[in-house]
Image (cartoon, rainbow, N blue to C red):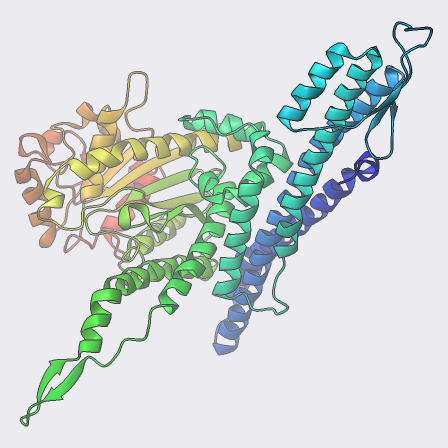
Length: 600
């Protein structure tokens, strides 16, 4: 970039353009939310049939278009802000050098060189003449010029050379910024169609990564999230960022923002939905790249015997595991999208994706809320147990972990229709893959306990920042999830609340690592437990025998000291059956209607 261009450059042009793209991103986000959370919800409440489903399908495609627009415009806006910041840094250095040179009666030429007047002690009746200094940035050349200045008879020479070097360095910095950003901005374009394909979303991810790498200096100018901060630290950090700074972090580091406990639910949801869309497209492209499975068998001999084909054996050895892995992850992602699509069905509130990582320890991580927990009067955080992962969390909707949270919301809403309710499915730990040996040990609960404690603190913090109070929270643990709750209480350090919640309710608990509720730091009046028949008896007392309950005591034993709830669950997974006493009792605790609880 030449001197005249940089001198006359108005970086506000790029900043104004960035604001325009950011506004377009915000409008696209608002349109997407309107389609998903209001228009679609209203249609489900009042309409049904094939025509309605077709219309809802088109709305989902349109919402995907707006989501893609939101992501890309957000990235472009941040890229332009970063470009403006880089150029503004160079321009400030140039302007400061020019002003300094002018103040010392030096003349800056149109090519950036600096002319100095005659000056110094006269020699043989002549004053040392003036001249022109051209800037250099090479270290060796600068050293030679410094040495020459020591012996130069004109004192203006040294000053002119210094200013010329500063001007050249500023021009070089601006040129580097232009060369860095020009190709990046040219690449930020979309296909000329209205279909958001997996390739389109993969391209959006590629764009985000490219801009993020180039915008490191810009992001470093923004105060980063507190290192190892607690939820209160995170909330304070976010509170004091400008809208522009928040937008930059959401567009360039959505996974990091989506995982920060203490941030508003709407912010985490926006960030995690971007991660979900990008990861889904990435996994779809990876799956599509796997060659088609060849014929598995071939006839051998004359009696109709069959044998594996060599082509299939080679394919199976190379691709089978990857194919199963990708299909399982994509199934979980589709189940999350199905929950989004059910908003409004039977009054179901909007969903908030508070955490998402399809690769977390190989099993995946999901935190999904029905209703906004930041503003809810009552919040229930449901922690599933053994064998839960991203592939199974939405399996068989009537009996899935996501489905259980939905039914708990529905029953709680029925009991307290005048109150706002939020129910959260929390799978942010490595749930045991098997009963034997994993679920018979405490290792995975112990590892997940600090993560759960941090989330519970974050839930309270976000609620306090949104409403001024912490609301009423119930932690619900099923099976091994209750063991995790017990370990969570034990990991609290001095001064921390063992379980940052008002009530703890466990169903089918094989033990909570203690003999009494009071040992968890929980008021026994707010400790609730229920058991079931059939397989649930085996789980509860099998777990206690394995050592998950101290001295073989489980929460449904009278000596544990909590409230034992009446339950009609016929087996270990039946606590959330519709119209059951078990579900109604859970809802009564969740909504704080303790007088409605039926004790056993």
